[in-house]
Structure formats: structure tokens, C-alpha cells
Image (cartoon, rainbow, N blue to C red; front, side):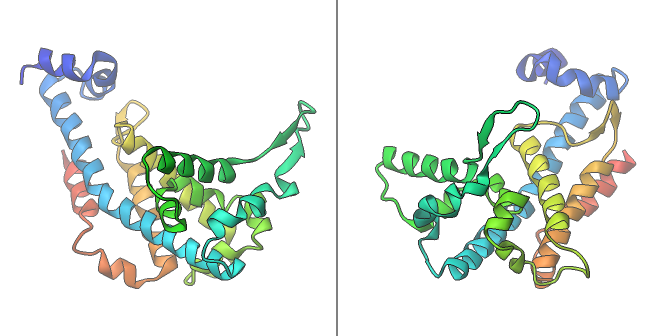
Length: 235
């Protein structure tokens, strides 16, 4: 492909950062852009595995906590509207109410209705975004749920808890959003640098290991990240 066409397809603003990092070498720029896509592609299986395991595991824990397989529907009138989620902003003096979890559930129900699909707890759980499950480790929801979500992580290191799990989940969530919006994961500032990507990769492994070490063994033949990063760092 001619570089002029490459620019036209992907836009000058998007390609500009790659050009700066490659010292305006057009060939290297195009190669780096494609390498970034390949690396993002390699992350998708691991991110998908983590998301499914996290979602199903937390769902199982909350079924036990509420003794209700339909907690995600029935708790719209329960913990999702708990008074603790309403507070007065100290800076503005305005009353603010956190309805992220409730609105996320209602949003999925609305989408299912619009598509003519019957509403079930299983479908609502499956449709929730990664941020929904991460938010359950934020202090407000975590307190209401009496710390139940952390029970999914049966292999946490000593003295590790909500804060450490949330920190890792938040890194993965932000990284996942970058990939899904086709943002680069090969830079630190204006330089080609995969160190932050390597940090997120370790966060994914940490979370899976904290849930169950056998997951690390299970993904070995799927995980292509480390050899790919080594190859890219040599370029």
C-alpha cells in the first residue's frame, strides 16, 4: 500500500504519533502500526478469559451472598439503591447519588427488550461490561456487599485485599478500553516502549493466579504475549 493511501485510510492525526516515534520513517511507521494491531489482537483471548472468569465467579459469589440466583434483577430494589450510595459533595455541597450498577442493569434490560429477547438473569449478567464487575470492588459497593466479591480470589498473597485487586482490575479495564478503541499500546510518551503493556500483562496473570493458579497453566498454549513482546522490543 502506498503511504499516502495508508494515511488516508487511518488519518494523519492517528498516524502522526507513529511517525514521530519512527523519526518520520514511513516504512517503519506502517510496520509499527501493524505490529501494534497484532499485539492488541494477541491480548484479546487473555482479556476474554479474565472477563468471563471474573464475571461468572462474582456472579456465583453474589448468588451465595443473597441466596438468590436472580440477584441481579431483584437487587434493583436492594443494594443498588442503598442509602450509602447517596452523599453530599464536600466541594460543591450538591447531593450526588451513585446509580452506575443500577443503570447498567436497566440499560441491558432495555436493550434486550428492544431486541425482542426475553429478560433473564443469565442474559443480564453476560451483557454487563467489565467496568460493572470492577465497580463492585470500589469502596461504596464493596461495603454494602460486605466484601463478598473478594471471596472469588482464593489465592491472594498475604495482606492483599480489595485495594490490590481493584488496582489490578482498573489497570486491565483502562488497557482493555484502549484496545477496543484502537488506541496504541506501544508507546510511553513519544517513545516506542512496551513497558506499560508488560505491566498490564502481569496484572492479567496476577488476577488469574489469584483466582486459581490452574488458570495460568490452562492458558499457556493460548498466551502469545511474552514472545511477541520480546520480538517487538528487539525491533
